[in-house]
Amino acid sequence: IILLCKQKGGCKLKEFIIIREKNADKKTQAAQEVLFNLPEWFGLEKETRKYIDIASTLPMWVAKDVENKILGFITLSETSKDTVEIHCMAVKKRYHRKGIGKLLIESVETYSKNNYFFIQVKTVDEGNYSVYDHTIRFYESLGFKRLEVFPTLWDAWNPCLILIKHLITKAIELAEEAEKETVWLGVWEHNHPAQKFYQSLGFVKTDEHDFYMGNERHTDYTMTKQLKEST
Image (tube, rainbow, N blue to C red; front, side, top):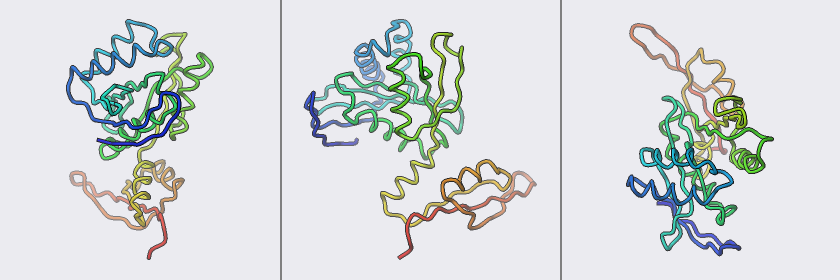
């Protein structure tokens, strides 16, 4: 459970909590209550019903106020052994711009970082609907990058944009908050694109060791990022 104190205007939201919801009926209730509050984003009832129906089967986090009122939720689905997707995230319109969406995403990033390398989300590409343009800017403000557009994945009127974020950045943030001096990771010697990516984040090769896959010997590089000077 995450307890946060906020002093915001408008709806006078002062405190809210984010919890991992495991009860299937409560998941359905949360999804239904929030999505039907957002017709600008979820105006097609048939498609919205699909989100609601599947919500009970997915990992879900729910934002509530101190009176247990549902404010928003987020669900995850695994797309591969390395990637998890934000299947649906929504916050009641009255509670937008209160920091709830940001904390919902931080909650699932913290959960996902030990099991996945990437987190992704699908939305409608820029230039089609103003509400989705705001959605894109929201995700980009949290470090997501545009990966690819699939013009007809949904339909011709709703081109699908995939945004993606490498979860190593979340691990670095947590290490900095914990005032650690370094973070390190392992990468295969022939995975040059990954090595180049990690170098762009400030990692350098500091060691190597052999490992075996069957009878084949391979080498893994240890790459380290210095967060602060050693004391």
